Image (cartoon, rainbow, N blue to C red; front, side, top):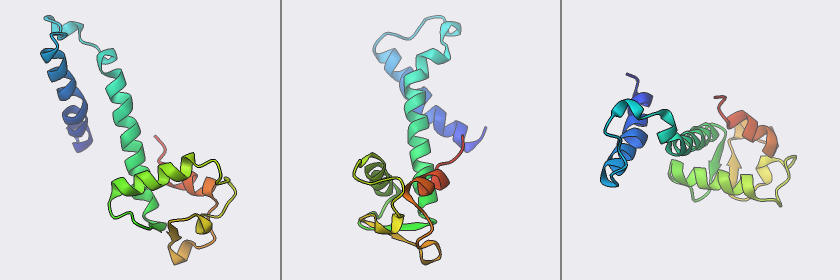
Length: 121
């Protein structure tokens, strides 16, 4: 079993099973338990994993002011992504709170930066 599979079990499956047991929603016949029972939690887990990997990738290209943890980088990226005043063709170098690594200065627009850091799933 890979570490990613173990993480999924620990972060999605086990808490959901405990929650179902506490709420008396756990089926007596476990063969009736299907992936649909975990769909919402799995989607949230996948979204969080994607955001985490995107933030980790972003740190190869940029430094983010006031972002000391990967979670804070995730918040900054989310803010940039949702800010409608920031245009896709703006250079990342001019985004407040972002300092591009010298090697990548003036290399990325917002759109190309997000395309580069977003892992293909």
